[in-house]
Image 1 (cartoon, rainbow, N blue to C red):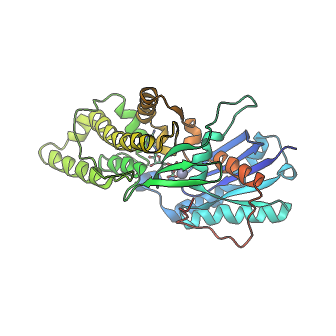
Image 2 (tube, rainbow, N blue to C red):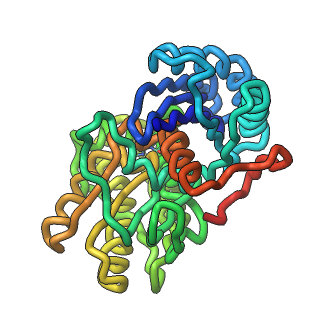
Image 3 (tube, helix red, strand yellow):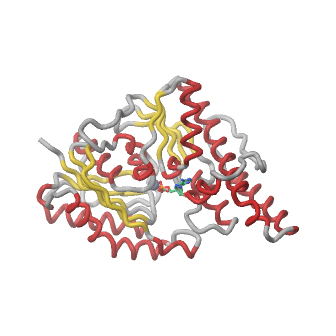
Amino acid sequence: MSVTILGIESSCDDTSASVVDSGILLSLRIANQIVHREYGGVVPELASRAHHQNIIPVVDAALKDAAINLEDITAIAYTRGPGLMGALLVGSSFAKGLSMALNRPLIDINHLHAHILSVFIRTGAQGKSCPGFPFLCLLVSGGHTQLVIMKDHLNMEIIGETIDDAAGEAFDKCAKVMGLPYPGGPLIDKYANEGDPEAFRFQKANLKGLNFSFSGLKTSFLYFLRDRLKDNKEFVQQHLPDLCASVQYAIIESLMIKLKLAVKTTGIHEIAVVGGVSANSGLRKAVEQLSTAMHLKMYIPEARFATDNAAMIAVTGYYKYLNGQISQYNVSPAARYTRL
Ligand code: KG4
Ligand code: ZN
């Protein structure tokens, strides 16, 4: 019997809906909110309003793309958290209402868990290969940076995380001080391609163990620019590719040092790198090189499944459904829902 899951994602600034049939993607719609660009970051109130405007058209389009009707849905999976409370309320209220109206089970999803299971999204019956268990996952997004051992689809252990900023935040904050619009990560990636990663050196954290820290790098970048701009107001414009390449290199190096250490300490040779920052072309190359050097099997989601999307919510919903993990209607959204 086929299991058709409608996934709904509304944790931050993307409203997304997706239909996944027995683990295979049938449709994915994402409405990006451009309204935040001019503010240099996501404005929670505006995000909630945009989700409210987008949610019905996005779900409707995802169902049409999948060529299914509402009655064909087996269960509805939605993001419970972490994320912006107002944004989460829109998706969760919509999901609860639809679940009641259709009399179909509701499944609440941890957004971070879903990022990890993005490597299980299959786009065809043949599909790509998926990681075996246990595997090691580096989750790098705008709000989180974690190293996780996945024991099976639903059981995991966090073995390292950032003690301050997330990797995506480091990208976005450094981009902001260079005057680039939000989100700056993809733009740094683009300009870095034409720059020299060794043009400038920025301070990297030297934490013991598997935890990360990016606030020192961000401060060192800020002070460096402030000093250079004193002498030359055009410094950023004249050196944009080199600045982007150098800061990207520093962030990637910090991630790779810990990933390598995690492989050595756990002895696990299958690795996945997921979350918005895994779309970064420099990071993808670095992970490929590490995999070749250490004989690892590596898995990185396609770029459209790396950043926020509802396909990962639907796939996670599929595995929770198979395991009977159905939600009650009194479950509330959780902005800081980091327990995986
Ligand atoms: O996973 P995601 O879409 O949302 C969160 O759950 O946070 O990640 C968004 C983050 C942002 O910080 C964005 O700048 C970063 O991912 N990002 C990138 C790239 N694409 C998205 N960072 C570096 N290079 C990219 N190509
Ligand atoms: Zn995310």
